[in-house]
Each structure stands twice: as C-alpha cells, then as structure tokens.
Amino acid sequence: MIDLPDLDAILVALRSPLAPDLHALIASRLEDAFACDLADLTHILVIQPGNTEAQIINAIGFSPLVSRMDGNRLQPDWDYIEPHPGWWELIYTVGDTGFAFLVFVERADGIIPELLKLCDAGASR
Image (cartoon, rainbow, N blue to C red; front, side):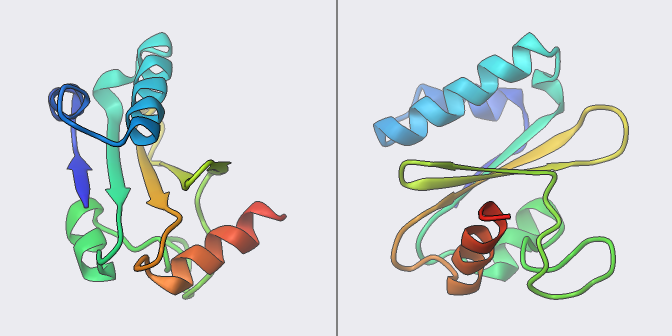
C-alpha cells in the first residue's frame, strides 16, 4: 500500500521509483488537482496485492467494500470510477470543500477479490 495523505507525500512519491503506469496515473491526477486548486485537498491511496481491508480502513478511515451511507457491504459508493490499464481509479469526495480520496486499485492477483469484483460490476453500470 502506498498512502499519500497530502501534497508533500504525493510529491515525494513522484520522485521515488514507481511503476511507470502508476507514476503516470498519480502525476496526471496531481496535475488535475493543481488545475482545480485542489492539490492541498487530495489524499491518494494505492492498493496493492496483499493489502487488507483493515489496512485500507487504517489509512483512509473507511472501507471501499462498505457503503459509507448505509453500511451495506459490497455496495459501491464511490463518486466516480474509471478503468485504466492495470488499475481502477475510485474517487470519494468528502464534504463540500473539494477534499477527495483518490483510491487506485491495482488489477492484479493478491488484491482483495471482492474489491476487484465490486470495481468490475460498478464500472459496467
């Protein structure tokens, strides 16, 4: 898991060795955040093989497997989902300040199977 809770962490990560596709994805979203004056209101979480639901909750305070609205399990409640080669991008906005969690889920063996199924099902809607 790569947890980038603020702009400084995101910038450090972009100067670190990352897979080229992940680097491009993070850089693109940071560029978007700067364009919208939201760079200081963006928390990026990268979910990789072996990460657990408990680790995700520890990082962002909720599980992408549980609806934040009604607590139902395996109901998508992201505000936006987009497929990318090798990745899912989930965006969760919080409040009306523009703050958002950007969650990148690697499409790979070792990812929580229910999370991949939820993304697959959600993207087809």
